Image (cartoon, rainbow, N blue to C red):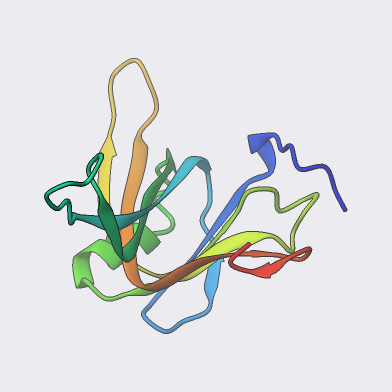
Length: 142
């Protein structure tokens, strides 16, 4: 089993060019995040010692960002047509290529630039279906 600690330099994000298409690598990405949370509804009743909650549906969202590449438009097109894309997020594609998050997502797109820096892009995504974690050591959901 490989070390569980990872450096971020070997991450890789794949995104489908069109809805239903195989995901392909995004060029020049530099950061990513994933957020998993579940709805919680309060069900505190008289006499409870503290607040009590029940869990609801899980959610998945996140973002990835880097440097804008005028030759590709995966995230821009995904935001423009509003259709879901296949996404794979490898936290270490070099040393642990069999471990990743994957699912179908809807993307938003933004870009920024300044006289003193590069032109950047950012894609914020939300689940359009299940987004799960897969590891070669533990399978789906570990």
